[in-house]
Image 1 (cartoon, rainbow, N blue to C red):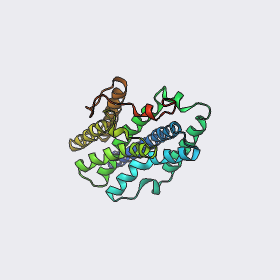
Image 2: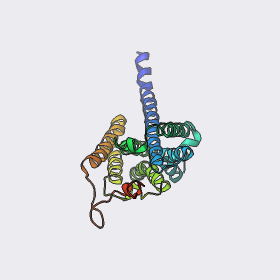
Image 3: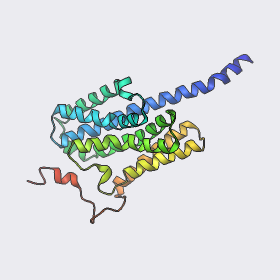
Image 4: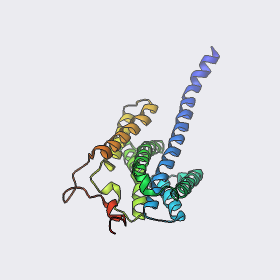
Length: 239
């Protein structure tokens, strides 16, 4: 009987430990995904290896850094530098790979868009969860989820001298992040099981973002049809 009682007492702690492990794994997945998008974007701009590594790192940790500063909590990669090291390692690997496989070949398979979509989906859920654990309200948690998700991409595009994806082409980008973060907040308010709270927003954000890329869905744009600004940046188009 005592063993059963002890197991019942330990169960919440085991669940919390499992959820913390899951969130850590997701953070690393998001870090790798965003670092890939940053490094490939650097390759498109013909940056050198140092530029690729810097851009990969900035994308990988940028959104989370903004979140932690706004929440006034320790910046995550300062406490665990491994996130920054992973971002740098991925950036270096992609930069070296690009010497044999040019970025335009990688773009055929939408490497940047798909890795960015995965990073967005993961970091929206992770960011909102960290905000909740920091004592933020569900509304603030939703906002922090959006900032965590889109912050890295905005930094990537600004450093690459592009208009941020979140502000152009009318695609579901910030909208996807907002939908996922809002869903996270609603599920928290309804006291749904935390595993579901984590996975459902990730799936929703990823589905919306991929559908937007695949079918051209998005919000109305100003001044007519969306323009592919990336094509205008390609020196081959201007030759």
